[in-house]
Length: 144
View 1: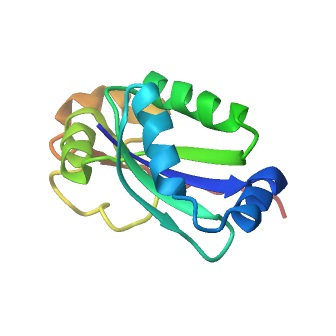
View 2: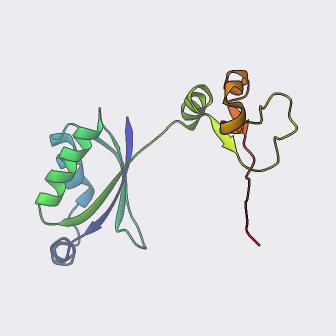
View 3: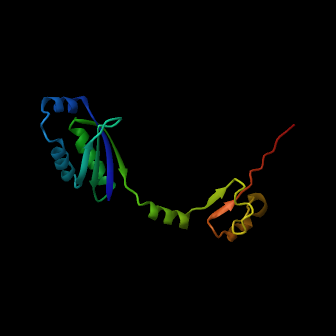
């Protein structure tokens, strides 16, 4: 599995850069990543809200959590956000199989393949779902 890590250096970490500007920080990150059971694929310094981005391959999220603990325990990094790379095509396939969209707009109201469901009136029509979507009117009741 691939993970994207965004991180911030602590004051201690930045002081280390200033003290030893020629040290290879990528090599240190590679060793810690490997010690936790991962593989550092790429690492770049950033300009902005985060100081670095790393692309890491690991077997599972727990491996990444262990790597985060190791990295932050050195005192050189104070904030690491781990994000898992996701295959959107696989996610869409799962969504198509397991999701039901309830549309409250009028877009699908006249579509013959999308049942118009008012739960208190015709919930028995839920077995007519063909597109993983149902139309549901928004009924507004007001007092004058």
